[in-house]
Amino acid sequence: AHSDDGGLIMPPALAAIQVVILPLYAKDPQQQASVLDAAAALRKDLTAVGMRVHIDDRLSMKPGAKYFEWERRGVPLRLELGMRDLEKGIALGKLRTGGEKFEVPLEDPSNKVSRALTDMKSELKSRSEQLKQRLIFRIESRSDFNKRLKEDEPGMMLVPWGGDDDDEDSIKEETGVTLRCYPLDQDELPDEQVLPVFKPGDLGGELFANVGVQHSFQRFC
Image 1 (cartoon, one colour):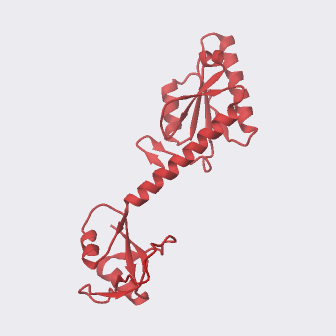
Image 2: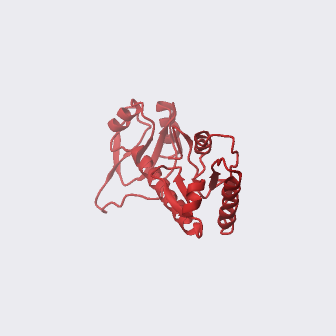
Image 3: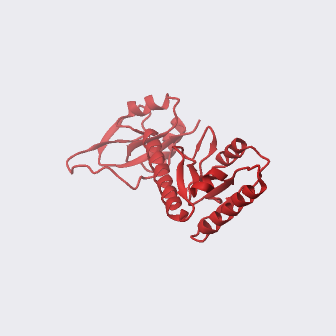
């Protein structure tokens, strides 16, 4: 969720640079000075509300190359500012998570930028949750467990567990699987429902009935 084929995707709260401002090249020196002044004012407005902002004023570098560099570094938000944008009183924003470019008013940029970063945070959280759920495999029997061990896709197995330290050592020796954690969120079960719980000391994979807690395994390849 925090990277793609283009490089890193840094969460806004963790990014050393949250916003990068890219003033675009202008042939006319006076227009160029106006664009750079507007970029400096934009940075001042955003830093005033606590944002971490950088201006990339390497005017000899083509915009596409700069876009690629900052995307690769995972900076959450890019703001492009050219003379035509300045005449409209806007900068063009682009989030690292994708989507269409959007207008950011130069007179009051902080509200729009803050909302954009908040939206990005929500998007990354949603992506992370979806990825986590896709990589969690719920196991209900020893046969399910053994079948899952033969699969190539990585992930975590969520299984009923009622063993002790000796059982943990045994199943690690038998399969190479290790216990990782007790999930904080446990499924609620009716009082009368009984779960099959692994007792891995039996090499035959015998299950016995008990009310166990769920536990996660991770396979190391």
